[in-house]
Image (tube, rainbow, N blue to C red; front, side, top):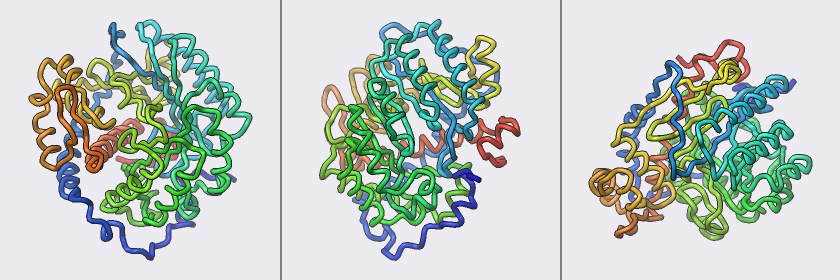
Length: 461
C-alpha cells in the first residue's frame, strides 16, 4: 500500500545522518549579515503576523478590474499523488471523481471572473501537482487563454510527470515549466519520501534533459537548509544544476510552519543559523554559470519568467481552493474546503472566505518587499501610486538597508539592491511566507473531518 509522503513514519525510517563536516554557521563569517538578519527576524515576525491577519467571516466580493492596471492570474490545483512533509500549501490526496468535479468548478469560476472585467497577461498554475490530470489541465489552459488573451503560462509539476504523454500536451501551451526536485542528494530525498516516489537523481536529470528543450524557460525548484543538509550536499546539488539541461533554478530556504514542524523535525534538528552560509554558498557557486534574476531565482539568460507571480505583478487574482488574490490594496483568500468551494461556485458566487484591507503604510511596505525581491524599487511608480516620495514613505526601511550597506545605487528613478547583501530580502520573504503558511494552517482548521483525512492534517490548535 502506498503511503503519503507526509506520513512521519516514512521519514523516521530514513533520518538524515549527522553530518561529519563542521556546521555551516561555524565555517562562514556571514559577511556581517548575521546581526541584521536577527534584527529583521525579530522585527518582521510580529509585523507579518499582523499584516496577514485576515478576517475569515462573511462573503467578501472581489473589486472590479481597474482600467490601465496589469494583472496576473493564479490557478491552484490542490491534488497530489503523495504529500510532502515540508509543504504547507492547500493540498489533498488525489481522488479522480473529486478532482474532475474540481476542474469543472474551475471552469465555472473563470467564467465568474470575466464578469468583473479582468484581463491577464500571465497565468501561473501551482499546486498541489497541476499535471495530475493532464487532459483537465490543458482544458483549463485553453479556456483561460480564450477568455483572457493570456500571453505567457507558467506551470509546476513533479519529476515523474516529465514524460512524453504529458510534456507533448504542454508543449506550445506552457512557456515556463517548473519541476519540484528539492534536492539531488539521495539521503535527503529518501528522508522526505521522494526517492521511491519520483526516482533517483540520475533518473530525474534524464527526465529534465528530455523535457527542458520543449519550453522557453525550464526551472528546477530546490530547497536548502533541510535538517542535516551539509555544504557538501549543497555543492553537489548546485553542480548538478549547472550541468543539467535546465536554464533556470530557484533555491528556497526551508520554511517551517506549524503544520510541518513535526514531520520535518523527525529528519533531525532544524538549524536556522545555517541558512545564511548555505545561501551564500549557493549564490557564489551558481554565479559561475547563472545570473541572479531575483533573490532566489537564477537563470542562464536574463529576462525569463521567474517563479514568484506575486513579485512580478503587483496585483494578482487567484482562482481555486486555497488561492490568494491581492487587488486594490486588499488581500483575499479563497476557502480551503473543497466542499465549500464547490457549493459557492455551484451557487454562482466566488468562494472567498476572508480578506484583509491593507492600510496605506502596509501597502507601501508590501511594495518595498515585492519590488526589492527583484532587486530594485521604482521611485516614479511609487510616487504615482502613493503621492509621496519613497524616501518619506519608507524612510525607516531604507535607512535600515543603507546602514547595512544593502543599497548598491540610489538615483532619480530607482533604488537598486547590492547583490552581496540581498540575503536581507531573503529573510524578509522567508518571514512573509512563514506568515502566509501560518495563515494556511489557520484556514485548514475549518476543514471537515473527511477533508482533514485527505490532506493528513492533525489538530494544530
